[in-house]
Amino acid sequence: MNKNLLILLIIIISASVMYFISGYPKTETVICTQEALICPDGTAVGRSGPKCAFAPCPIIKQITTPSSTPQCPKTEWVDCMPGSNKIKSECDPQYLKWAKENCPNFKGETY
Image (cartoon, helix red, strand yellow):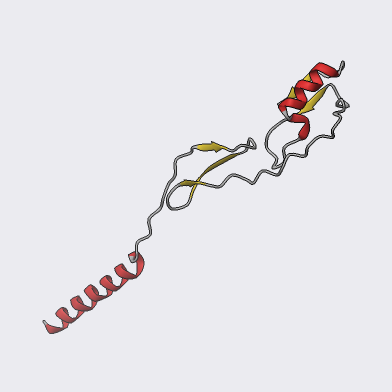
């Protein structure tokens, strides 16, 4: 009888040790919603981390100021597609307005 009790005690202790090793401390899996934040430069960032906070937006580089006398674009259309960290001076609303009024072959911006 003592032999059976000893075997049962060893099994209980072994099971307890394996339980604590495999499940302690318990880690939680965080699943964030699939939302996106549109940054000022047109890129999108999602939620991440343990608190599901939005990732920081990329730093926008300064817009290069056009020369004191604007020049007409070389093409009919200016590519203003968002996504890169730099903003093109040709995509500035004031410049686009000037170009539409003063450049006979200029048609506008494309996205």
